[in-house]
Image (cartoon, rainbow, N blue to C red; front, top):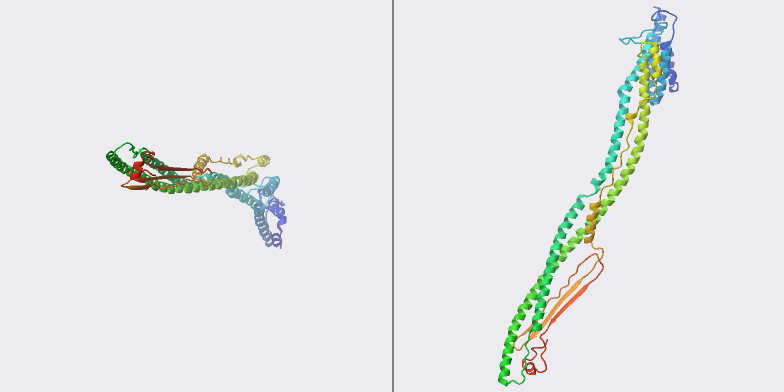
Length: 453
């Protein structure tokens, strides 16, 4: 019935159960020597068996109370301190080298009870040494690793979001198309110069062609001979004219063909440039979002880990002091135990459990990326500007033997830039044979409309 009663003690009476082993170990008996003599009768044997059962129950209850005291080391510390102080005050016996208990002079303490109390405290000491303290340091290292991981997340925002594969590919394409564009523009400009030169040569030729003649005062035969010479000269000039006209037409055709291809190249360059501007925008925005989220997480993690670090320090101090009190029982004399009790202070260094707040990584240098974006923006038009150049060459030459009409092509060039200025240049070249004077009536009448443009 007594054992049943002990098993039904509610948890709220944990302190009483905890001290039960101490009370059992320190209970006095009216006998002398190293142990109480037990009568070898049925009643004596029953009493001895019951007392041993009480010792075993008390030791188990003490261990459970110590380990599970609110799961807090400070609660365990209070229980251990009180238990050890009472054991020392009551003259608790010491274990010998074989871990067997002996009784101090002047005290009569049941050997099994004292041993049970010591075993419960020793078990707690070992659990702290092998588990609790190791967990404190493991948690400390885990906290440092967690802070470093979050700090690294902030630093990795640069490699994760900036100078990505997309922007690098687009930048290479923009450089490639830019070179092609510059080359074709240079070639188009050269062909335009050639076309203009050919047109100017044709115009200058016609401006200098003289097929008029003054026949006044000439005899009919002389006039006829002069007229025949004039016609022959006109035919030579006509051939020269046709050659110049062909050269001008060829130059204009080459210019038009190259200009069309260059427009397509320029368009590809502009498309890639605009895509690069957008890609870099995304990179910069994603990087800043990553940084903002990472820096906030780093601050939050630091606050949480700092709080847990303070708790670990408190637990660590409690574990160390608990071990100090339990180690008091290993001393061999009452004087040593009393002295050591006073040394079990909670002034335990915890510097090694301090955490260092991680330094927030600096912002990435985006100068190169922004410069690349500015270069791409130059090739990406925000508005459309049309520049139209029209070159028209019209030449009409008529003689009594040959009529030749040559008209050059009309060329339109459209260039897109970032400005909003529209420039239209129209050059019309009209080359004509010089008109004859009023005195050249005979040629005009004879040659018909040869000199008419």
